[in-house]
Image (cartoon, rainbow, N blue to C red; front, side, top):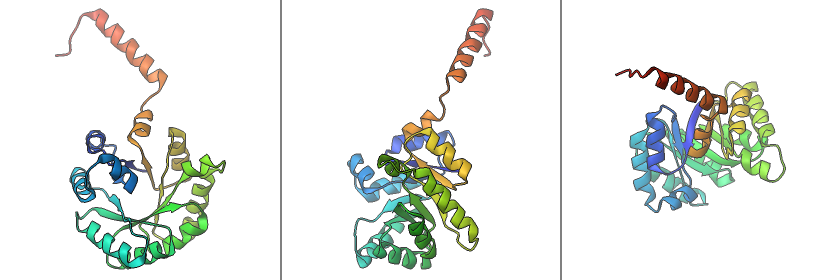
Length: 218
């Protein structure tokens, strides 16, 4: 399973990339706004950190506007993946950009039917939002299971399932068990994956035993 980091914080991305935990990056207008910087500047810097796809989202809502913004964004760096919303105009833009060889991430997916439409439009990634479904008392992981099953039924569909709105490690583990291709996680959730009380207790015991020897490796 590929790990994308869901942030526009360059320092966080660089730190996680150095640990080998970043296969790509997803951003959105809200994350870019938090950075307080210009979108093109942030995307360019992120693209220089990772060779994987970096999702940069359009903000227009009409087809011509999305297409123009998508073409601008893809020219920032060779690994930009243009992100569009799952609307009719978004799917038209997805098809047009995909036919031009631009990878596209179709976002804000909340149903299997929407995911099927995105795949038919040529999406590189489909981003179902599991956390937001959980927020309204709907099982977000059922959506992942349905999309994965549908895509497997039709091998000609090459769209990858990119699990988004991941709130905690259990979302990640369940997605991996279901066979989702990618999960995009906030840096805090990626770091939560590292933690286990037995790991910390074991390390403390090893270090205490080593200290008693009075030795130094170097």
